[in-house]
Structures are given as C-alpha cells and as structure tokens.
Image (cartoon, rainbow, N blue to C red; front, side, top):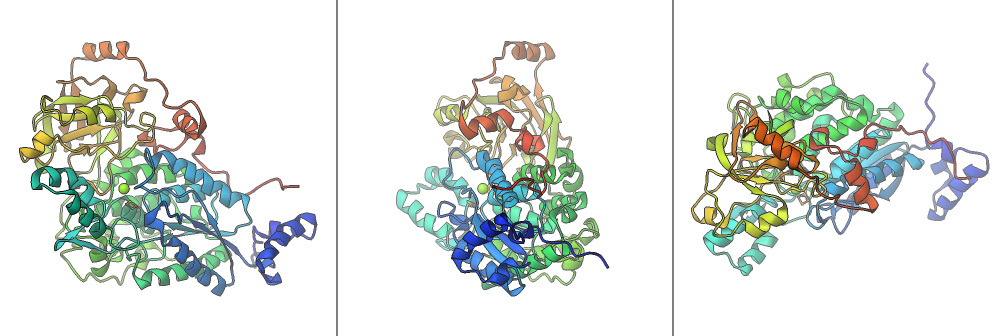
Amino acid sequence: MAKKKSLRSAEWFGGKDKMGFVHRSWLRNQGYPDDYFEGKPVIGICNTWSELTPCNGHLRDFAEVVKRGILEAGGFPMEFPVMSLGETLMRPTTMLFRNLASMDTEESIRANPLDGIVLLTGCDKTTPSTVMGACSVDLPTIVVPGGPMLSGRFRGEKVGSGSMNWMIKEKHHREGYTAADFTEAETCVARSIGHCNTMGTASTMATMVEALGLTLPGFSSVPAADSRKKRFAQLSGRRIVEMVREDLKLSKILTRKAFENAIVTNAAVGGSTNLIIHLTAIAGRIGVDLKLDDFDTLGSKVPLLVSLKPSGKYLMEDFFYAGGLPVVLNELKERLHRDTVTVNGNSLTDNYKDAVCYDDDVIASLKTPFQKEAGIAVLRGNLCENGAVIKPSAASEELMKHKGAAVVFESMEDYHERIDDPDLEIDENSVIVLKGVGPKGYPGMPEVGNVDLPKKMIMKGVTDMVRISDGRMSGTAAGTVVLHVSPESTVGGTLAFVKNGDCIELDVEKRKLHLDIPEEELNKRKAAWKPPAPMADRGYVKMYVDHVEQADKGADLNFLVGGSGSKVERDLH
Ligand code: FES
Ligand code: MG
C-alpha cells in the first residue's frame, strides 16, 4: 500500500519543538480547538474581495460559504486577502498590476502553512493573477468564479454592463443623451452583485478556468446572485479537501491538452482577446509551451456557438438559463481532448455529457452555428513581426480585407487632443494607428485599442473603422480592431515608424498586416528613431517596465515565468 503523504502544513503545526509551539500558539487566540492542528488539511481561501473591486464585492460572503464546505469535509479553512484588481477604478490600468497581484498570491501561498487553495475571483484580472501565482507554487487548487451580474434593462432594452460604455459617445452625439439619461443608464447596467454580464473578459476568464478543468462543472455561468452560486461555492470547499488528500495538484490538471481545450472553448463562446495574454502567461507559469500561433491554429476554425454580447445579442443570465457552458462543452466534445482531468477527478468531456440546451437562440449546435469560424486570427507582416491579433467575430465583414491611409496618433494624449478636431484629415477608409499603448509604453498595455471613432465620422453614420495598436481591447468591445501588435512601438517595433498617409493593408483571411512603404524608407526611419524616455524611475512600475515581456509572450515579468514549487527551506527563527 502506498504510504500516505504527510501534509505540508504538518511542517508548521506538527512540530514538537519551539517552532511548532510558535506556529500553533498565536493562532490559538482565534479559539481553534486542538484537533485543528492535528492533521486536518489546511485550506487557504485566497480572497480578491475589495470594496474597490465592486465586481468582487460579494466574495466576502462567499468565503464563509466556502468555509462551510471545507469544515464539512474535515479541513481547516484560513482566508487571506490578496491584491484585488478592479477594472473600473484603478489607473492607469489593472493590467499594469496583474503580475504584482500574481506575486502577492504566489508568495502568500508558499510562505504559509497551506495544503490546498481556493481562489475567489471575479473581475477581469483577479482570475489570471491568482491562477498565475498559484501555478508557480503548484498545490491542489480550485477556482470559485464569482459569477456575472443579472441582466439589466434600460428603457425596455436589455443592456450589458461594459458594452454600453462603448456607445456613450455615439448616444451623446447622435441621440442627444443628457447627463440625466446617463445617470439613469448607469444604474440599469449594473443591476446586481457580480462581474460584467457580457462575454467580456471576466466571463471569458471564468469560462477559461472551467474549460481548463479548475472549477466544478457548470459553475462559471451561474449568475452571482443566483442561490446555486453559493451551493457551488460550498461544494468547492468540500472538494478541495479531497483534492489535497488525492494530491491533485495544478500541474496534473493544467497539461498542454487542457490549454488546447481552453482555446477551442474560448473560440466557441466568442471570448475576449485578453484570453490570449492571460492564458499564455498561465501556461508559462506551469511550464506548458503555448505559442501565439496556437490560438489561431486551434481556435480560428471553431464555430461560434453562443449569441452573447459583444459578438451576439444575449447576456450571461440568458446563457445560464439556456444551459450555460455545459451545453457548449458537450457540443464541442469531438473537438476537445477527452483525456484531461478536472478538479472533480473526471475528464472534461465526461463532466458535461448530460447537458441539455434549453434555448437554441442563445446556444447553437455545431450544425447551425452563429458563425462558421470564430476564434482569434493571428496576423503577421512587417507591421507586427512577432504577431498581432484580431477577433473576427467582433469585426465588420467588409473591413476584414482593407487598404487605407494611416492616421497616426503618437500617444493616447495625442489621440484625445486631435480625434474630434474638425480639420483632422480622416475618412471612413482611413486606418487609425495608435502608438505607445503596449506593455512598456503606457505602461501596462491598457484596453484602449478600440478607440472611439472621430465625431465627424459618427455624425456621418460610420460605425466601424480599422484601428491598429499595441494595446488591448476590453472584452466587452467590438470593431475591426487589430491589437497586441508586437514588438510594441516603444521598443522600436515597426509600428513606431508609421507616418500619416502611409498605406496599410489588412487581410484577415491571409493573416496579413502590412505597412506598404519601400524597404529603404523604412530603414531610413528606423535609423532616425530615438527610443522614448523610460516611463518610471522607481518602485514597482520601474521593475515592471524593466522586466515585462511583449504581448505575444503573455506580458509576464521575465523572471516570474515558471515556478518555485511549494517548498520553503528556512524558518523564522
Ligand atoms: Fe469587473 Fe467588468 S468591470 S468584470
Ligand atoms: Mg474589461
């Protein structure tokens, strides 16, 4: 019979010496009985609750529910906070801090007497940051996704949190919306607890962790306010205790095949382009080789099976009522790897074999998809030597093959200053080029790629134009937007050398993004180029700017790639 593995926490609490005394003693002030220190799996509940992250505002209550489950299964729950990244308040962008939050998570887990981890997540970056950190330690880990908000209605019309942001300029100029109209709309879009209720980045991340096998099956699409969400949270608490006993670590679940399943699933749900960066960074932490081209090779031919905003018409609550992600995963079963293991010990495909679709207007079958090919296209060309991405399901068909003259903005500030200038030389065929919004340039690679169109184009009734940048785009946004251009302009990528009037060619079918100027002219501009001054000279931001990788590599800090395991060599005395 195999020898039972002793618990990691026993290295702290099992000691009969001075250190054992210290480790137990101070915790006694919380009133824990003796048997808590005698071999119960200690489960860390890593909580991204914060009043500054409204999407995660309910996770404090959820932690109590998770604790119930842990106690029932014979574990010892210990909740701890980590840096929480709220999309709507943090400046200049949460992406600047994703890697910092991942370091917080990693070190908090490793340094403490924990045997298993529950990650409480919600708003966009709170999922990848905590999963990245947990991967670098590699203990048994389960994710509790906080869930989307309920659907909102504004004057009879269904509105998605997030997606409405992108219509504000248009509503103001074309429909004459007043401040009072916007105040009313504000409350309608954010109707309940939970994260954005479109297939934006938060729902994409929740879908991703479920497709990777890190949540109980069916968990990710349940709205935050639905009582079933708490039931799942409690069951997750029970399950993590068993996972510790089974030593079902992250590295056993997060194989290359699990990542491939996540890519296919993301394509089928029309998920955010942000997935590319986060999934690549997670793969880097767990030691799986994932390349930018994998997203195109594995995902771009997958049909779109859901009609969720921004690619379709419904919201996450409708998705849940239609059967949610289980229906999609069941439908995809022939395209998914069957031999992956998930947190409940079963394979991904086994978990969903009984799923039933209740509304085919929301979730389609493979035979009658909403689009034949969804996913993400990876572009190549002299304008993006290490790649760029576009989400065809959110783009305009007629712009997918386009040639136009560049209208260049050197920075976000330059864009704000000139975009609505009536004298700006621009028409609907122009290509808007935005520089300086990459990982090092902004810094932090903000979600600005889907810049608003100029007022005069909006007034003309133009609803989409080709836009190209080294930044990201919110998962709730849409448009013919080329993103993640790598290398970014700030480090001397070709994007830095584009000038007003240059012809740019986009051909999504051919995966081409080309700056059409003579080679000698390009070389001349390169030779004359001076890199911009560094964006920071101290603190975390300096460390970030000095070490951040380019978008095609997941924008992790170069020294964070990989993991250090869960072993800690030395003690505090
Ligand atoms: Fe938090 Fe959208 S702002 S999920
Ligand atoms: Mg977002």
